[in-house]
Image (cartoon, rainbow, N blue to C red; front, side):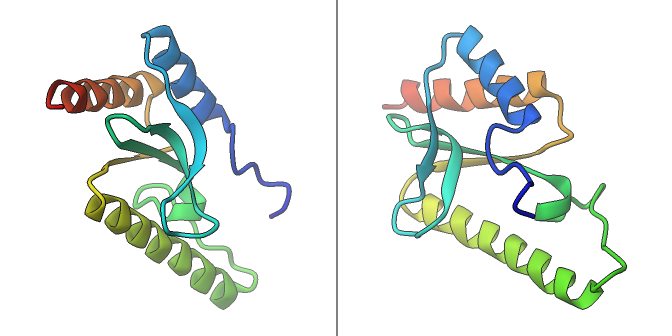
Length: 127
Protein backbone atom coordinates (compact mmCIF):
# COMPACT_ATOMS: atom_id res chain seq x y z
CA UNK A 1 0.00 0.00 0.00
CA UNK A 2 2.89 2.36 0.61
CA UNK A 3 3.64 2.34 -3.11
CA UNK A 4 0.10 3.37 -3.97
CA UNK A 5 -0.04 7.01 -5.10
CA UNK A 6 -2.17 9.10 -2.79
CA UNK A 7 -1.68 12.38 -4.61
CA UNK A 8 -0.89 13.55 -8.12
CA UNK A 9 -2.62 10.54 -9.65
CA UNK A 10 -3.18 10.47 -13.41
CA UNK A 11 -6.89 11.42 -13.18
CA UNK A 12 -6.11 14.21 -10.70
CA UNK A 13 -3.37 15.71 -12.87
CA UNK A 14 -5.61 15.56 -15.95
CA UNK A 15 -8.39 17.47 -14.17
CA UNK A 16 -5.94 20.02 -12.78
CA UNK A 17 -4.49 20.69 -16.22
CA UNK A 18 -7.93 21.34 -17.66
CA UNK A 19 -8.92 23.62 -14.78
CA UNK A 20 -5.70 25.59 -15.04
CA UNK A 21 -6.07 25.93 -18.82
CA UNK A 22 -9.59 27.28 -18.25
CA UNK A 23 -8.18 29.98 -15.96
CA UNK A 24 -9.10 28.51 -12.58
CA UNK A 25 -6.54 28.82 -9.80
CA UNK A 26 -6.65 26.45 -6.86
CA UNK A 27 -4.67 24.96 -4.01
CA UNK A 28 -3.62 21.33 -3.70
CA UNK A 29 -3.82 18.82 -0.88
CA UNK A 30 -4.95 21.22 1.85
CA UNK A 31 -5.97 19.80 5.23
CA UNK A 32 -9.65 19.39 6.03
CA UNK A 33 -10.42 21.96 8.74
CA UNK A 34 -10.74 20.24 12.10
CA UNK A 35 -9.98 16.73 10.86
CA UNK A 36 -6.44 15.55 11.34
CA UNK A 37 -4.60 13.73 8.59
CA UNK A 38 -7.24 14.29 5.92
CA UNK A 39 -6.67 16.40 2.86
CA UNK A 40 -8.74 17.84 0.05
CA UNK A 41 -7.37 17.01 -3.41
CA UNK A 42 -8.21 20.32 -5.12
CA UNK A 43 -9.27 23.34 -3.07
CA UNK A 44 -10.81 26.64 -4.08
CA UNK A 45 -10.51 28.45 -0.71
CA UNK A 46 -12.32 31.70 -1.62
CA UNK A 47 -15.58 30.20 -2.86
CA UNK A 48 -15.10 27.23 -0.49
CA UNK A 49 -15.25 24.43 -3.04
CA UNK A 50 -13.56 21.11 -2.16
CA UNK A 51 -12.91 18.55 -4.89
CA UNK A 52 -12.10 14.89 -4.20
CA UNK A 53 -11.05 12.43 -6.92
CA UNK A 54 -11.64 9.02 -5.38
CA UNK A 55 -10.07 5.78 -6.54
CA UNK A 56 -12.58 3.07 -7.38
CA UNK A 57 -10.93 0.37 -5.27
CA UNK A 58 -10.04 2.44 -2.21
CA UNK A 59 -13.34 4.31 -1.93
CA UNK A 60 -15.84 1.65 -2.97
CA UNK A 61 -17.05 2.64 -6.43
CA UNK A 62 -20.41 0.90 -6.98
CA UNK A 63 -19.41 0.08 -10.57
CA UNK A 64 -15.75 -0.90 -10.37
CA UNK A 65 -14.90 -1.80 -6.76
CA UNK A 66 -13.53 -5.26 -6.16
CA UNK A 67 -12.95 -7.28 -3.02
CA UNK A 68 -9.64 -9.07 -2.60
CA UNK A 69 -9.91 -12.80 -1.97
CA UNK A 70 -6.84 -12.99 0.30
CA UNK A 71 -7.39 -11.65 3.78
CA UNK A 72 -10.90 -10.66 2.73
CA UNK A 73 -12.19 -9.73 6.19
CA UNK A 74 -9.29 -7.34 6.84
CA UNK A 75 -9.75 -5.67 3.46
CA UNK A 76 -13.52 -5.35 3.89
CA UNK A 77 -13.01 -3.62 7.25
CA UNK A 78 -10.38 -1.30 5.80
CA UNK A 79 -12.44 -0.33 2.77
CA UNK A 80 -15.58 0.19 4.88
CA UNK A 81 -13.58 2.53 7.14
CA UNK A 82 -12.42 4.47 4.08
CA UNK A 83 -16.01 4.95 2.91
CA UNK A 84 -17.16 5.99 6.41
CA UNK A 85 -14.29 8.49 6.58
CA UNK A 86 -15.35 9.92 3.21
CA UNK A 87 -18.89 10.45 4.49
CA UNK A 88 -17.63 12.07 7.68
CA UNK A 89 -15.29 14.38 5.76
CA UNK A 90 -18.04 15.43 3.36
CA UNK A 91 -20.46 16.10 6.23
CA UNK A 92 -17.88 18.14 8.15
CA UNK A 93 -17.06 20.33 5.17
CA UNK A 94 -20.74 20.82 4.32
CA UNK A 95 -21.44 21.91 7.91
CA UNK A 96 -18.78 24.58 7.51
CA UNK A 97 -20.36 25.93 4.32
CA UNK A 98 -18.20 24.18 1.74
CA UNK A 99 -19.46 22.80 -1.55
CA UNK A 100 -18.06 19.27 -1.72
CA UNK A 101 -17.63 17.58 -5.09
CA UNK A 102 -16.64 13.92 -5.27
CA UNK A 103 -15.74 12.15 -8.49
CA UNK A 104 -14.56 8.65 -9.35
CA UNK A 105 -11.22 8.07 -11.03
CA UNK A 106 -12.94 6.57 -14.09
CA UNK A 107 -14.98 9.70 -14.85
CA UNK A 108 -13.81 11.70 -17.87
CA UNK A 109 -11.48 14.53 -16.86
CA UNK A 110 -13.31 16.92 -19.20
CA UNK A 111 -16.64 16.23 -17.49
CA UNK A 112 -15.12 16.61 -14.03
CA UNK A 113 -13.39 19.89 -14.92
CA UNK A 114 -16.58 21.25 -16.46
CA UNK A 115 -18.61 20.45 -13.36
CA UNK A 116 -15.97 21.86 -11.01
CA UNK A 117 -15.75 25.05 -13.08
CA UNK A 118 -19.51 25.41 -12.99
CA UNK A 119 -19.61 25.00 -9.20
CA UNK A 120 -16.78 27.49 -8.63
CA UNK A 121 -18.34 30.06 -10.95
CA UNK A 122 -21.73 29.67 -9.27
CA UNK A 123 -20.24 30.11 -5.79
CA UNK A 124 -18.26 33.19 -6.90
CA UNK A 125 -21.35 34.75 -8.45
CA UNK A 126 -23.32 34.31 -5.22
CA UNK A 127 -20.66 35.99 -3.06
